[in-house]
Image 1: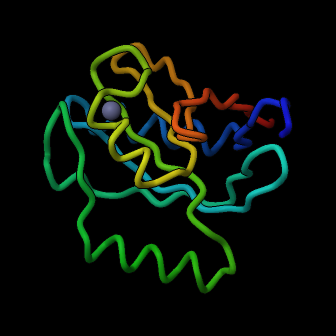
Image 2: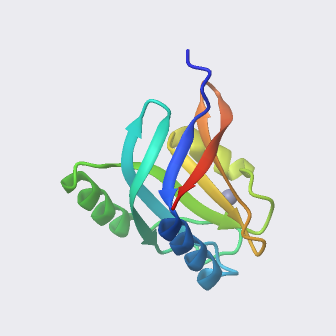
Length: 139
Ligand SMILES: [Zn+2]
């Protein structure tokens, strides 16, 4: 097994877009799906789909199933896949117990942004544990 650390690559513009969404939604948790491709050492993000948080809550998020289906079909048409999930929460940027449960079910890269500090970090569920993923911002 590779010891190389996993990375998620996104552009400065994509990261700024996520941050803006987090700031605009605050104190409700913002969320987004990231589509792109997997490579040996992680994922690269091609497109970001901002999604509505139907919980409308500062401590949880849930996507609208109808919106989710529409996003998935756009991603599939483009020959991409969902490689990441973004959300923010009012705590340090590490997974909550609820996040862990959903990370097990959705083993893609999870980017969590802490609000209002805007600190962020990436994680993935691998081999029965949470592994940190390096977030690389490409200019
Ligand atoms: Zn969370």
